[in-house]
Image (cartoon, rainbow, N blue to C red; front, side, top):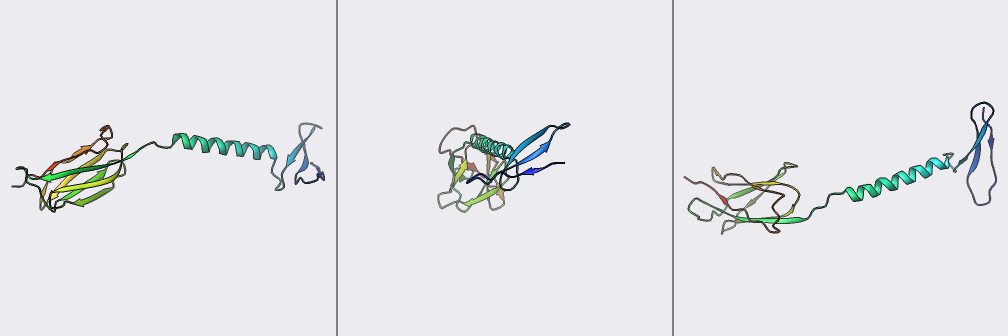
Length: 150
């Protein structure tokens, strides 16, 4: 059905393959050393480069930022040892921080294109959750949490 002709090209590792088309027509396909058609290899390289470039332009563009704040009771007294929970609303990852002696907490490395929910627990009481929005453009936002101790 098909015949193979090899051409001895100096320094080239390609050969030609005669492929029958319709009727008695024959077409020569240039092949690489593994026997793959060269036009297919060129298409694959072009497609790979296009996908790689598209991936770079579509990669997310974000910056990181910290969030700080103070945990207090209803009277404004700082609560030392309160647990502050920070939840990423996209991945649902929760991290926590124990407040220092001034009731302060600090989280860093937050993506500015994600919303976060913050809440504090002191003993058995919880503060109302507060949201740090991705639309909040401040570079160093502060979120103060109030725990209603009875």
